[in-house]
Length: 194
Image 1 (cartoon, rainbow, N blue to C red):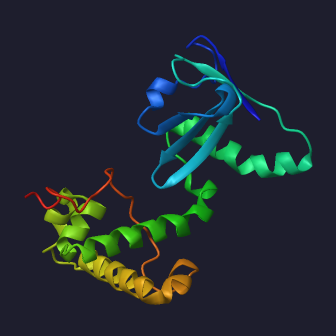
Image 2: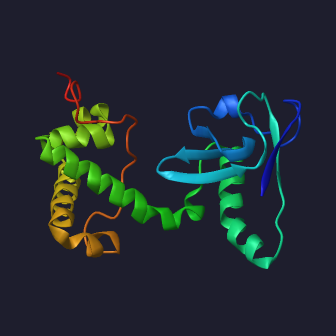
C-alpha cells in the first residue's frame, strides 16, 4: 500500500507530480483513491494510492506499508524502478529487462498498423526513429537503418499471420526495440508531412 503525504518541496526525496506531468498519468479510483502510472521509454510503474493525492500537490512523500514476505517480494522491483526514475528521470535498463518483450510487441503492432494503412518503410522509420535520423541515414553508406525497418516489417507481417508466439517469446530477428513516439495515431493525417 502507498500513501502520498504532502510535504515541502525542499523535503529530501520528495516527488513533485507537476514536474513529472509528462510521464505521470493519474486517474481517480473508488472511495477517493488515486491510481497513477509513470511511463517512460516503454517502461512503467504503477502507483495505487488509497490515501493521499498526487493531483494538486506541489510535493509529496510516498510512504509504503508492506506486510508479509509475499508483499515485500512482489514490491521490490516496482519500488526499485520508481526510485530509479525519481533519482535519474528514467528507468535504468538493468531493472527493465522483462519489459523488453512488451515494448517489442507494441512496436511490431505499430509497424503492422502502419503497413495496413499503406505506410512506406521510410514512413515507418520516421515514426519509429525520428525524421532527423532518417534524413541523415536512410540513403547513407550503411543500410543498417533500412535493414532494421525491413526486419521489423517482416516480423510484424509474420506476427499477423500467426507467428506471434515465436516473435514475442524470443524468436529470431531484430531484438533491439526502438522507443515509440508520442501520439495516438502515428499513421493518421499529417504523419508523412502531408
